[in-house]
Length: 232
View (cartoon, one colour):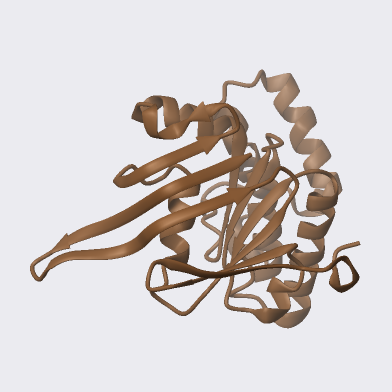
């Protein structure tokens, strides 16, 4: 699904050029659950932003399925990402003056999905995430775990092939975090490719492969043996 070749990213600073990604070569197969780990400043979020097509100022080659992302214009990249990628953030990024139902519906409204079809898709999502009773509540009326569930429902409402998660349980207590990771397992088992950034060994255990970064370089990759799998 994804093939990165010699991807690099740097920033201009008064002291010169600061590198955050160096010669990244990474292949992610459809249906994988990949974990990006490493200390703060290792380049994890920078790499996730490249994968999400949110960042244009990198060098190298990025192939997404049959598309050469590095050859696409900004609008083409945005359209490709909108069709294929969902994102989950640590800070939820819900819109405070929209209800649960309206937050989940937002990506569909941007995609010009007909209203009747949107209503059915949102109703299915509310039912799946057991949020029907909370559909008219606002984000500040929900717990952190509930807000993250809404964020995930919003991220997958359009059935993306790829789900990217940046520290998705960072603001949650252990019980809520476990619920979110078990939900990721179910999504992965249903065919969604997942790439998560985490500092948590517990969360990393849910993945099928761990990629470790340091100072912008990939320093190791570990494929989990089948007998160590947490997701069943």
